[in-house]
Image 1 (cartoon, one colour):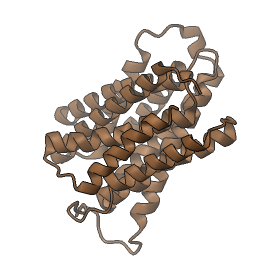
Image 2 (cartoon, rainbow, N blue to C red; image 1 turned 90 degrees about the vertical axis):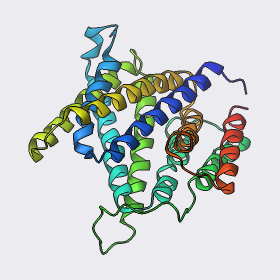
Image 3 (cartoon, rainbow, N blue to C red; image 1 turned 135 degrees about the vertical axis):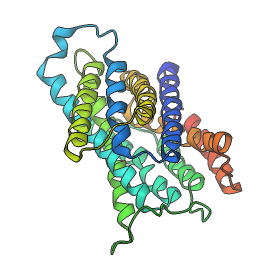
Amino acid sequence: MGVDPVWVLMALLSALLWAAASLVDKLAVNWEFRTLEILPATYTAGFIVVAWRQPSLSELWQAEHIISGTVLAVFSLLNAVALLMALRCGKVGMVSIVAGSHCVITAATAQILFSEQLQVGQWCAILGAFLGLILVFGANEKQMDNNDCPPRKNPYRWFWLALLAAIGSSGETIALKYATNLSAGAQHSLIWEYFFASLACHALVAFYVVRLRFSSSLFGVMDGLLTGLGMLTFGVALSLGPASLVATVATAAVMFRALGGICFFGDRAEPRQWLGFAILATSFVLVQL
């Protein structure tokens, strides 16, 4: 099956941008900034990025773009909030395994909703990518729990939260694929996504009377710029390729995050994690065949 190399490059670029955003988040966590301090600036900066050079204001106000943008915002917030709550209550490695299952969830859902017919080898590559995720972020006893989470009766709360994050990520991908089928493409829906998500985050800050600091907002702005650019390139990839394969290639963000942790934060990779890197890279090649 022929593959347009442009969507592959766009998917990999989006993965690289998302990985860079995650490194910014890691810095913010090290500085002990609260999530609710960072998210308003994150979504505001993302809104500015996706709204830049808006081609047509008249099409922006069409009902289908507003509705699809609202759906995207719901899934985006579900992904962000659930993942952060999961990381607060579970091991980083185990949470990443469950949250990384979005590539399999997306592939299965896309086949049902979009009738995307994948070959056996491509399904094997998708499952291989999931195996790579498990090896890269496999149960690593050196990765400590976050002690900020109070003890709870349900020790597996982190698992269900991470699964919600995976569902949120898959839902966002599927909704964005639907948006690419609209007349103006995905950009109009992305604008509404970031606009509504930004409003929701600012409303939460006002409700909880959270003090916004300039330093925390800087981290949010950097995160938003990188994530917004990642969403734009991801939208381009979805407009050119099938959602199931685009989402799988975009899981390269997992590998980029791990390598970034090794290079910038001194994280140590075990032999099975290097094997996971190799399986991920191989899967990204096989999924294009």
